[in-house]
Image (cartoon, rainbow, N blue to C red; front, side, top):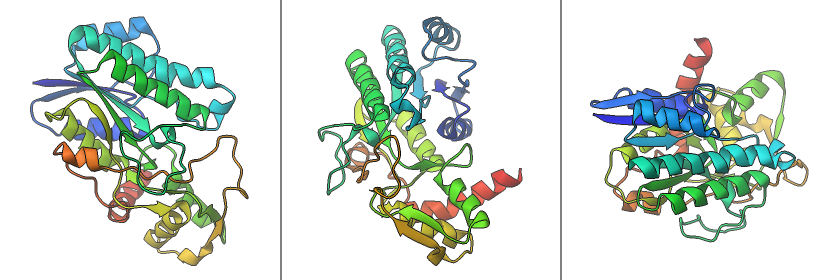
Length: 290
């Protein structure tokens, strides 16, 4: 029996991951939310490790308010860096594997080809800096049992995300304007959850991996595809630029991550983003009805 602890169990990815893991044989799952397990609190982390005794921890807990982090970097640091460090320290004492989820924001976003796992980092936002600090803590404190999985543009049936926002705006507005100068790989959280479950049960070596939906697209192209899935006219999605749509935190212009290290470790690639979107829309509609 493999005991897997999922932190951030009430979040978008944590919810899907717990559902996937509970379908597996010989796996016992605990997926506490932040009120049950505060990863920034040493007594909470210590007690959870002592009571559940996990073989694997998958850390999906994160401070993801990208713009808010610009004015409250300390709060983001506590969850995105200090929390993973506590988890890694506890895991080192118990010989537990730790899979830590990170982000494309650790890169500068100025590349012209997909980022490989060993490419130089250079975050340009507070969120990115805190996530990179979390990566560093996991790899330094748990070099033989620590995994960092970077992903990007995640959306799912739980929580707020771009797909749900576009679905709402399609009903509310005649047209929507979406930036066409930021490119990335949309990633359905259910697909990512399946990949993480595979990693947790694999013999892949510790290290850094990238796991995203296959292919790439701009936010504008992604929005048009969402409209198509809704049966709406995709020409209602108009183009704009990042300069015309300023945000407190700078967004990476290029967020495409290479999945080469993932597949080289024998792990199954995630579905192409467009194929995944079709499957995801059914799940999102079902969740909305429920």
